[in-house]
Amino acid sequence: MNNEIRSAEAVKAAQLRKHKALATGLFLLMTLVFLGCVYLLKTRTDVWIGYVKAFAEAAMVGALADWFAVTALFHHPMGLPIPHTNLIENSKKSIGDNLGSFVVTNFLNAKTLRPYINRLELSTLAAAWLIKPQNVRLLVMEASRLLKRMIETSDTPMITGFIARKAGELLDGVRLNEVVANGLELIVERGDHERVLNFVLGKVRNYVVENEALVKQRVKEQSHFLIPGFVNNYIATKLTVGIATYLQEIEKDPQHRIRKDFNRQLLVFTGVLKTSPQWQRDLEALKRDLLTHQKLEQYAETIWERLRLQLLQDLSAEDSALRRYFIKSVEELAANLQQDAEMRAKIDRWVRYNAYSYVLRNTKQAGVLISNTVGNWEGKELSNKLELEVGKDLQFIRINGTLVGGLVGLLIYAISRLL
Image: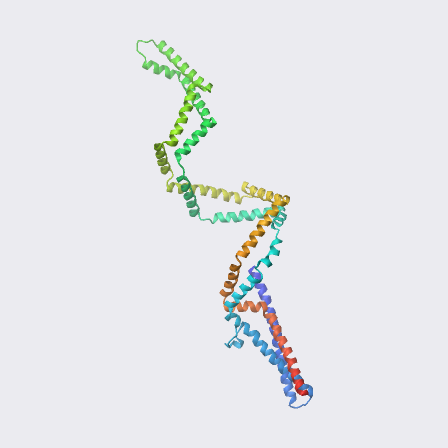
């Protein structure tokens, strides 16, 4: 882009030099004609010489006057600090203010903007562009590159600090005893605790059956030395079978008294857990110990680092799940825009309304931007910029001044001769 600007400026500078040379060359030609006529009048009395001399003389005056006028806009003529010259450089502030006011008044107004904004159909253009697979790939590739760049240059301490701070604020408002109690109530309502109870009963029953020898050993140790061993074994076997059978009954019978009692006690416990100040204090103390600011920051750093690495890996891969999701989302959006005229109309109305409102709300800022931009330019830089833009056309003023001045001088001379 900079190379293109420099190239365009070089072309304009060349054109300006060419037209300056043309206007100056015409002035020099008139000067030579005038001097030639003065010389001829010393030796000859031809009438036409006077007419030509009058034309050339007036043409020189016109050329010099217009040269002074044009040059005075951008420079001091011949480098002399003549008052009211170098006008652009000396008046850049007022030029900036007037230019900003002109643009705002004549371009950024409701009457001028409305016809253009009402013709905006960005949704149709977007749909037509996004329906092409190569454009979708280009959009996803550029979005991935931009997102990857943002993640790579992100401020990790700021992000982890934000996560830790927000997590702390969220957890400060959480009453852990109520959360645990509500969780237990939900488990009971869904019957999930029944599966836990069945699992525990089955494990205990299997343990009792598989450790019958241990039961016999314990019975023997606690029995009187006069009781025979076979009696102890019989008691141990009966005890083992009885316990296992009882546990199996509980396990198989959904309406067993033990089950009902267990459910009742669990609900009572959840009520106590929810309302007990002691439980609240104990769980809050546990929360504070587990979730100190330092630990929250460590958790946040771990979470962000893992998320960051995963995102960078997905964004770098050509066929990652994240890219496939992006492509699918864009394709669905394009299809919806193509098929849903009402959706396109809503989007276009939203774009038009916000564009119209935004521009009208910021017209003053646009004027200030133009004014400040022009005002902050170096005076010589502004003068040179404007001369490159309009200087070529202003040279025609010099050319016209030369010719018109000559014709006026010729007319005056002719009238004076007649009178």
